[in-house]
Length: 407
Image (cartoon, rainbow, N blue to C red; front, side, top):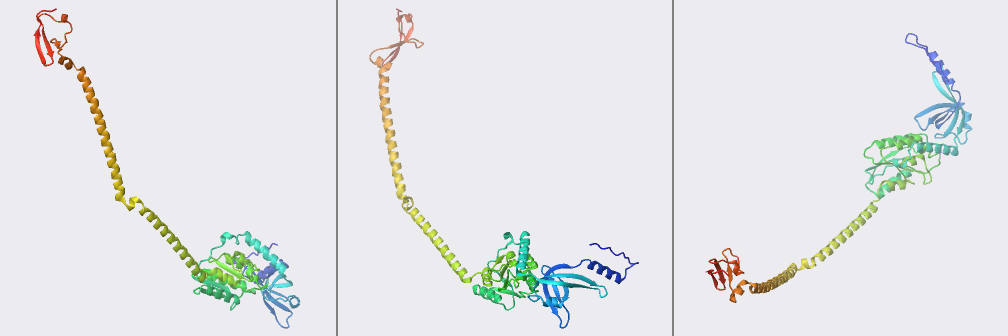
């Protein structure tokens, strides 16, 4: 579908009727279309042949004012009511005279449970493909939150279950409670706004979204795409407890933790003071046993060290070593004296041999040694000459002689 743009300028403006007719022409070309949405503000005026309702987009803040024949609405089963999901065959029109856009419905068909579930499954697959349900996106819950944000219906059983069970487990827990509509056409928007306010409060450490059981249609606001995306964008961890354990609205998939019931959600967000006290006592007892065991082991080790002879009687050990040193010293002395005695005997023996072989012993027997001036021993008479002076050595000394006649 194409449209011819209007030509205008400050000097040549177009009349209002021209713009209105162009808008009517453009809108009229759209024809009849099938539109899905959620019905709100159904108005049936007495005696009027037409009725009106607002068709709201659940994933965006957009709506259309729709009119249709009253008989068309009266014939619907179940009756058309606020919050009903419908598929409408409508045609947009622009009334030139009044400059008003209107939507005229020619057929209205409530969306059955089976169709709703199929659409929810399709939406679930789309959101999962975007990674909104991925496990790595889940944030850990604080061990002991300073303040718990609670989004629930006013004076509902879900609110009592969460608050009473949480305070029974940890009496000092504080709550920031946002009471909102938990079913109907405005439920999703109110829950989104409440979550946004709690997420903006720095004192709130965790947010709980709780609602009691209900039909598939009653729980539809908690499968609203805008609500799912709002929970996914929260900085504060979110815990959901919607319906019964078998109910699985889409907001459960994107929440950081899911409680099967509001009571279970209370157990998830705050610890049990009695359980924690018991755990502390167990840890203290375990630490005491561990330390006592270490002390006993070290005491036994110290006793074993003290009982050793080197520690128990260090002087006795020194005395034993001193006796060993004395024995070694005496043995060394005896060995040395033995060596000296053996060496003395050997020396005496050698001295006797030397004395026996000494020329002096020969002289003592009456022999003499005759030497020339140069010290050479005379062995042959032919070796001397007449008048040669010789030196004669005898046992008692020496004297000089002169050769009277050489032989």
